[in-house]
Amino acid sequence: SPIAPFFADWLYNNMTLNLREQAIANNTPLKHESVHLTDLVMPDLEKIDFELLERMELAQQICSMVLAIRKKEKIKVRQPLQRILIPVLNTHFEDQIALVKDLILSEVNVKEINFLHDGEQSIIVKSAKPDFKKLGPRAGSSMKEISAAVNAFTDVDLKVLEQNGSIDLHLTTGLFTINQNEVEVVTKDVGGWQVAVNGKITIALDLTISETLKQEGLAREIVNKIQNMRKDNGYEVNDRILVTITPQVDVNSSVIQFKSYICNEILADNLLTEDLTDGELIDINGIEVKIKINKVYGNRK
Image (cartoon, rainbow, N blue to C red):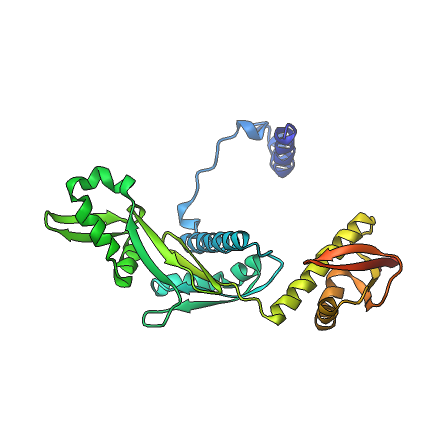
């Protein structure tokens, strides 16, 4: 923005006002009159929480993977899903994700994260194949033998590769270290699940939408549509409203089950389901209903 430099100086001058007044009183003017002329402060590495940075990076990666699956499967984020499965690499990995679990679930609208430990039956089936473009220059004439070894990787081999970032292959020509970025990990999707891999992180997302999840998704969609209607009508954020929706079986079920949630979100004093001669025709996940909203009174004191 063209005004950003001026705003930065305005902010700097306000934040240093006391220092500036003291400097004038002591006849020792500040060295710099503009934030753009000051030196960057060197970071104090001892104050950086590297554990926090690590778990926030894990949270960001997991959220991105889940959202990518939702986009691929055309499932809106407003539609809640039940669970994410994450194979555990080690105790530290599990502890770090557990500390940001609530943040992840909130961001991707999923109910729970389940960790998979060694020995537990998993719906996540992995295999590996070599990245010939990356391996070719290093492998040379051993490429055929390396390819066979990578194709034969077991779950144990893949876990070593994920944990260490590399794995040693014992070839007829000697020891050959293959790096994680030189191998493509392939997952097999099982009915109702989608699996994604990003480096050391593997997730499986349960795509099954139960009747309860479907009704909650409809409730969230109703909230979204009515919030848009409030905005279009020019209502203030704290205006109370009365809402009427034409009867429809699925919508009725959602309204009954999640009425308190819907009313709290849209600031409605009441939410009724009855026939309307007027109202706005709204599409809620493929269901057409009429919705009418009226402001009950203005700002609540």
